[in-house]
Length: 206
Image (cartoon, rainbow, N blue to C red):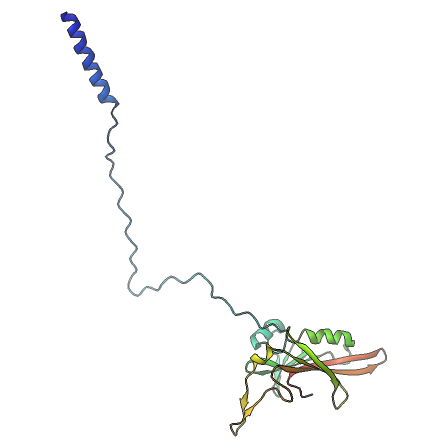
């Protein structure tokens, strides 16, 4: 009986020691300190905004109504100015501005580079607003072919001025707001009719 009691006591001691060894030690590792907010020094500039500001869409025209910046972005820097005409690309283009926008543009090929009427009309279309609509065709007093167009968007590109007397003066000479003309200088060559230059100008005053 004494041996059996001693055996039970020894068994209980062994079980108690085993349970203590299997217990998981509590996690007593210290927590890392919280990150402190970055303090901005007095007078330090703010970080620049990385988002580029939106740019206004360019006016939808290859010539008339374009801003000077848009025109020169395509045709290069001004070469010379003579009597209010701004010349570009070896004097292939002569431009007049009003309110900072193209109001008159002449494309010149000269006799040596004269083009067919078909090519001249194609060149003219590249110099006018995209929303242009042909109103009619006629001949000027000197017999040159003239095309009269109107453009709803073009009328917003120019504002009325004032005479020295304070009277309103429309930039659309001979026409209504939004009107413009294309003039063809056509000459008869041995090879047939050829165009030496075209003019696109606001108003209706050939």
